[in-house]
Image: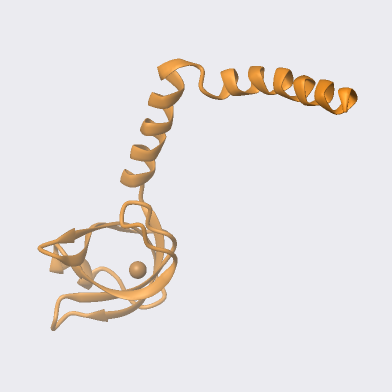
Length: 114
Ligand SMILES: [Cu+2]
């Protein structure tokens, strides 16, 4: 019993520095927030599956979208600039940003990966 208690105390003593380390003041917190914002504004990778110029829509197979809390999937997006649809074709790899515009998922930035 005494042995168990002292090993518990030892565990607690060891745990304190680790705890103090992981929450080393507000600097650590700010860093985490900044990283999250950087992720949210980062471009996502995708591949063009279908281009619908008539409707101004685009089908993309995309990786996880941090800002939309969306896993990887294939889905249809609107685009903010229909001219982009003339510059891409199915099979193109693209980097893009997507956001909800008037409740519709919309590609707001798009560039073809050469
Ligand atoms: Cu999606």
